[in-house]
Image (tube, rainbow, N blue to C red; front, side, top):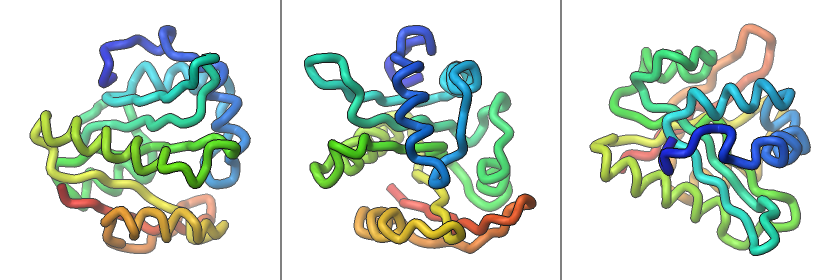
Length: 163
């Protein structure tokens, strides 16, 4: 992880709760599964206020990560090079429209540049629809690569931001 923290040093219980508020835009995770996700992540940024309440976080994986096997990640492994895959970026509902998402992405982009990674990649749901996320990613400079249908039926747009 970016800050050399182990998963237990993150407020992963709180992060899990914020994650699960965002279903269906992200998948539901039990606390143990979220902990395991953090343990295998190559990069994680978690923003907290002075009261240690989380208002945003980002979890990501480098293209060569062998521990993470998600469907979208595997698609990018086959179709992109030199990337940091954003598994999830979540901003607490009360902190939206304050530049938190942009701040999280800019921190990840900076980390990529320091580590010679050329692209940030992610997917955004088409079905179920997530138009605000499409607009946000396009405004940041992400380009749509392809729409992909998952085996379980949902459709996502694969995005790439060349750094």
